[in-house]
Length: 390
Image (cartoon, rainbow, N blue to C red; front, side, top):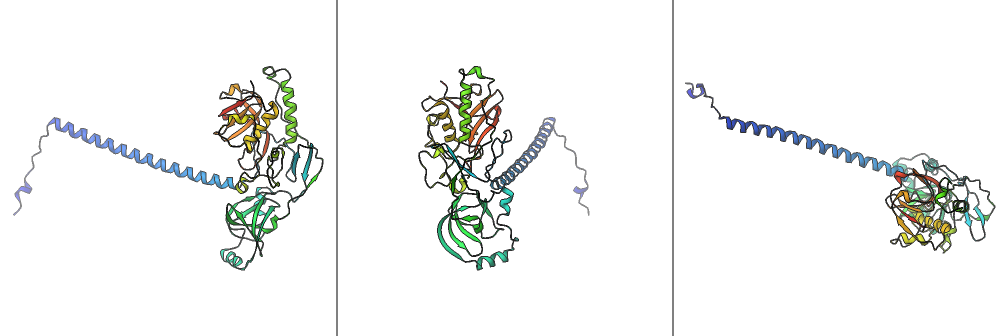
């Protein structure tokens, strides 16, 4: 027999209107919440993708930055220096003469660094392991100098990880000499390796020689001369030209090659970059001047800050008072600007409504390179300023 209750028609219940409205409203809320959920998920996915993209960009940027040499390119500036890539200029202000270090081999660019110790074919892992086992070392404890820019490697072979670059003329501690052409050195307190052919125990010798410089000097324009005392712009330009002769554009404000710092080390200029990743601040010049009153949290003025303070004193003297301000329109020639998120100080040679022209040191934060004449647009001059005008 069939179950009768299965064959019976079920009466449709007549749902009250109020309940129907509640049911419809609940259904709409569910649909709305579902849409919100989908949107939130979509936004989370976008954020994750954005973070991954940023990490990828930063990683690639750092890798690129680590492979650069000490040179820095300024998009808005002209190269106003002579080529000093093959010689080191040391300016001795005591006797007023220029000296130069005798030429070694030409300093190499970044592409050449990739080749300096890589003339041999790249070896596979088995060859590398066999070579490491065959190589013997003689322990030493000495300071050596790079003949040219040379890579610092994690292992004694040209296919291993590159840890950094030892720039031409820079020193490093050697702890062992390898029998197969790779020497052990101390880099960042760890053992690393450099090709033996690019290291020398002898420091380049300094000989006196008159060097004739052909420089297009950077000076202040006279279009706003009326804003300054009579004749001041002319006097300022004369001083700036003399300073450019002493502190050459493209050279390095440091005392590389000198065993110890002296009170007069700020007078020394070389063409050997500091290479802060290896030497830290050991060879950076320092200068303590009146403008230091504008930086009460600094123990000493080195690198960009010391260089700018030195120029300020040489223009205004050591007794001119210091005033701090924040308005671009107040800038005058001879002022100092603290920019790049309070990371860099420049000395202002010229100023217009649209840009400033500066002298600076260590703009790459690595080498203490001197540069005269870089233009910085107004929208990038964000920070605070120090004036000696009173």
